[in-house]
Length: 177
Image (tube, rainbow, N blue to C red):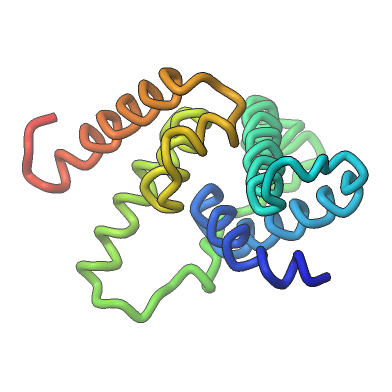
């Protein structure tokens, strides 16, 4: 319980940044600690518990993204959620979560939404690397360890992610991509 108390703010912060909204972030953070509890016998202790939990969180998020991609494919087929279903019921409406509304000034809120959307549109591997570097302030070496990839791969993913975010934000900032 002490490990959860000590590491939950960082894990929730990472989950929030990966998912892009508080509800999904909280779910991912909970899933992370449940998975860590279930796999605690696999924790070797040669790394920090927080690093191990970060890795679990990123892996769970990547699994979730893969699942959502598969699910998104089936949404275009009427019976599975696209258009009217075969039973005559219309598909569920996509209603924004009211908890996503902030009290910040409109312009700053709009800019945050642009950035969130730009990051959300990244390839999952690039997004994970960028979030760990820019929002979680992890070193390239730490990111390589957390993601289980070579250092050069981390650097190239972050460079591609930065370039993609900049290109996506250029129209909103009045710049050329």
